[in-house]
Image (cartoon, rainbow, N blue to C red; front, side, top):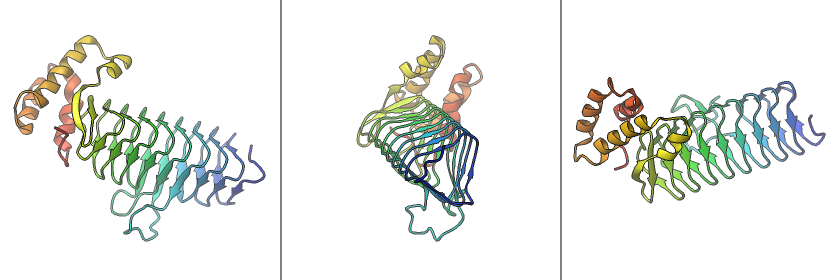
Length: 256
């Protein structure tokens, strides 16, 4: 399952049924889980741990040193979970000592060509990154988020669960859960109703989330006032708990 032209460091650890394509290079501290397929011309370096059943297409660079001038060779990591599809020319970097030291990508993500995930980013599960989506350092992307093609996310921003961006969106502040965003710079355009329907959200739940969106964006309330009102509604409508929790921890402010 390993092509003769591939270069595998003796210290690398490969699981059962791992496939390594022609001319790929696997570094000393790399771990690759069972049934993962690495295509041709892929470079996996650094302290990189990759789970099971992933498919990594040609010309990707995973686990290279961060694009951060402060990095000075610390033993930081990249962790990739299970069942991810990582298409051509993607670049995922190691973490830095200025953060938790680990760049993480969870399970079941669909990551298209030319995506960049910079140092210390934390990506959840079941996300979709369309072609050329770009994350600067320290960005958090929560479960089920969808980034449209050519979306650019500023460092330290957070994208909430089930949020969605349109093509060419420039994100300079946090996008709350369930919200659709578009533009340069990003503006909110309602909740991601169609995506939520596909994931099994009921009509009643969608109605509750639409009301919560109006509280945040259409009521004329200051953000803290809107969050306080939503806090009062959580007991009766637990569907909005992710939104309330997100607003409580947002540091860059949300798109308005």
